[in-house]
Amino acid sequence: MSEGSEKTNEGPVPKAVVSRLSLYLRELQHLIRAGSQTTSSNQLGSLLGFTDAQVRKDLAYFGHFGYPGIGYKCPELIQAIRKILGTDQTWNVAMVGTGNLGHALLGYKGFRSQNFEIVAAFDIDPNVVGQTIQDVPVFHLDDLPKIVSERHVKLGMIMVPSPVAQQVADQLVAAGIEGIVNFAPVTLALPPEVSLVGVDLAIELEQLCFNVANRKAKAAE
Image (tube, rainbow, N blue to C red; front, top):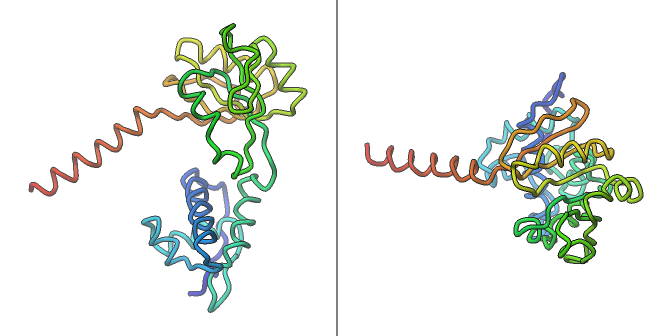
């Protein structure tokens, strides 16, 4: 079967498919940097541990992208996936909380390469407010609505302790933020029109431990 020749799926796109799109995008970018201009579903799947059928099925939710005898043209597929994800434009991001993790992420250059720009950080610590961290100005949290409006911010990152995470989330929503990445290990209650992604590093480590522990158990059988 030729690349992208499977019938386009209908209905809502599963969350897992969207997650894999981001993985495909990263691998395509790596391939471009390595000098490759084309790839195949077999190669993409092998790099990520998926089957070629899975790759074709995922992409078929959004159209047909392959060429018979060629496979996928990396630059074209990158552009298509960016458009699907909405990252073919720059998104301004606000970060609330400039502790150790927040400080580290303000210096992460990978955001900009994927069209995310942290344009403002917020805190309540008088020793931090008014400072600039990694070229990002730090404002008092009270200024959140004003800065979000002025700088056309649609996405927010919560980097505060769990006890105040919901309060900060409510402030972000009230300021007009439409999507939140929450690094606080607590479940947030948000209105349905606001998208939420939770990042709990302890949970990720637990999942990793499960995989390692079970692999050792199977090896001992």
